[in-house]
Image (tube, rainbow, N blue to C red; front, side, top):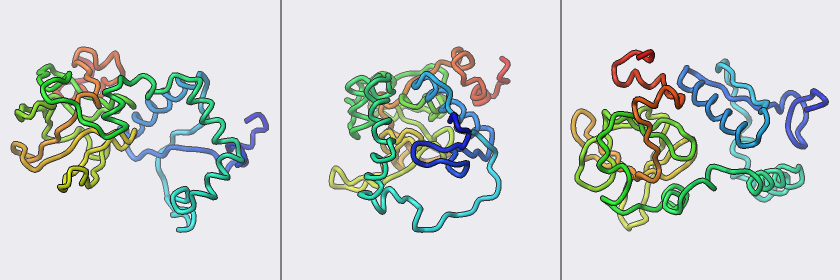
Length: 237
């Protein structure tokens, strides 16, 4: 912003500056990792600030989720402001995360597909480490919560952080199931069932193609050192 006004595209002024507000250190680190990824993608610094959350004042209901309530008007504004053209240009000219996906990874994460049981990368993986979102890199599951459910897909008792995922009703097969998606990247992960072992009683049945496995010995150098505490050890070990 050469003029120093802040904002983006047709929206100018400090009230249009972007920011990410975090409530704890985990959210802060996730935001910082996401920002670094975008800066690597664009090849330049991003002005979005990462700030501790303070007082929050809800916006008028008319403005909330405006792009869903008024899609035609929002679409016209998006293109007229230059935002639409910029996004298309970035998509075509940069190496986006989706362009790095294999056909199976794309089918699973972006088309809600399911990989073959027993013929996927992590169904029988017994190594120590964490499983992260293949698109965003956000930590999702811990090897200590993984168990053999006999189904042919990686199964976990719980996610590392409930806030990293979201549940949706899925009736695509004619019966009610609960779909699991990554909240950050909106990637389809798999489904959750109430037939897991104690103490949770839940089984997160997840596609290997939606995950990337980080071995315990590689976690620190790949930027996941804070999660070594999941093993009950100091991050310095």
